[in-house]
Image (tube, rainbow, N blue to C red; front, top):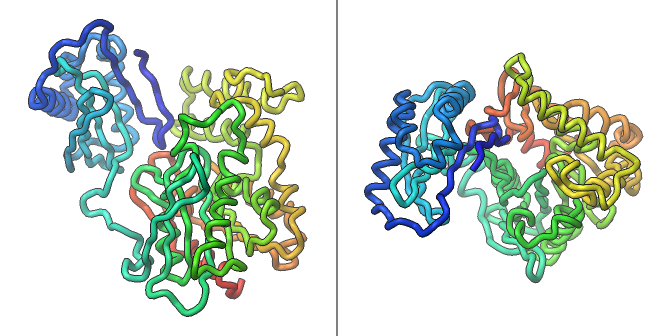
Length: 458
């Protein structure tokens, strides 16, 4: 098994081992495996990496030589800050392996150190991940969302084999009359209902905050997360990945008792914002659109820009980073080539995503589609000034394309000076590690959305 570096917020190192072929030996008992995991964790955090390395199985040692383990631990502390203390521990079984999560406090943000132990009570996997679950001392909900001010109902979106679990959050007590409602549409990647990244749950923040202000909010699990193994990725486009389910969610709301069918809005975050003009074109009865950190530029260009930004954080470009960046640029050029076709090998394209996905994006310019929406379509654009994933450049492009709409009061553009990609406030330059620290969508963003949906002053 090879060593791999994964882009997970802070580019944290993930390494894993596997077993040799042949009949499995008698399994070590759970106590022995737990003892190995705890011993390895103690040696790692004490800086005794050579002793910890000796606890690995042969395949893991080969996949992760001692110098590589030292580099992984150094990088982790460089990004998360020096290790401080253990906050908690839990054990679980994953595909026959015994896995132990050690939730740790580092100087900048918490992480889970996951240690996988094989049947011989040898370490076969090591992962550094954003801390999962509620951290000691962390608030349960944003301060603007009072628990008693909302209630949640579990339901579903769509029909048949691709039905998606969903949650409808409504104000409590429910006001007289039918409620305005908002559907939340995810950004790229397989996302859960809360659009969880590390300890942050921006869609949950939006649902709770807006329900407390008299607005019903529907959020659902993304299709690629729920049914990723069933989908035909060779033909998948943004329509199947995002647009169809957003339209199904709107349909579900229109059939829900207590919801005003004439006041249903859709919010799209990041790539979900890119999809909004297509969603609105398919459903012209929508009351309005909220673009949250919505990308206006081609996705392949954003990939190159993001990789360049992350690689340049330490002021230097390593050979590995340079190779990765050049590969991304080459893949972006393939997407832009007039020779791109459905038969173009996925290996030549960004992230190995097959050509139909890129052809579909290329054929649907969100700026032109937004400008062509029916007169009177209301649009709200929210952008964080510190966002390096979708930047102020994108907001300016939306403004240029919709200048006539803005002049008529149909489009509003709001820049949050402290906002990041999740519209959570921060200070200084935003770096990937910021998304591994608990934060909430800014109250100012909640208030802007509420005024827009409720039809208040702009």
